[in-house]
Amino acid sequence: MDSNTIYTKSDSIVSRKIADEVILVPIRQDVGDLESIYTLNEVAARIWELVDGKSTVKEIRDVIVSEYEVPPIEVEKDIMGCLHELESVKAVTEG
Amino acid sequence: LKKKEYRKPEIRKVRLAPEEA
Image 1 (tube, each protein chain N blue to C red):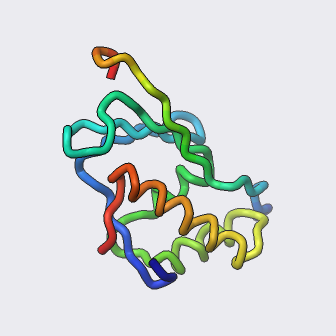
Image 2 (tube, each protein chain N blue to C red):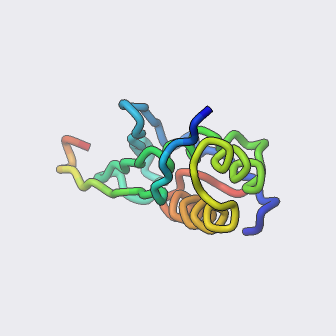
């Protein structure tokens, strides 16, 4: 993964926004763990929203930096960590 | 616009009973 990587949401996950948070619910057996749901805090939820199959990690970073008080270097590392975690539960895929 | 306070992105796993899931 680098800052030009693009991610796409999996269609095996459904999401709902509740206040500033998002819950992710796996709906297919090819997704990691059907007996769990995932809750995303406000920033993770914003990253999830910005994953659209077109935006690069760098573009997602720029949006987050424009909305939150955070240095670009710190946030890029956090975004990559968040996307890596989403990828590990098969909520997103590269490309 | 005033920027929002930043918190590290966090993903929490919540385990459910099979039927609840």
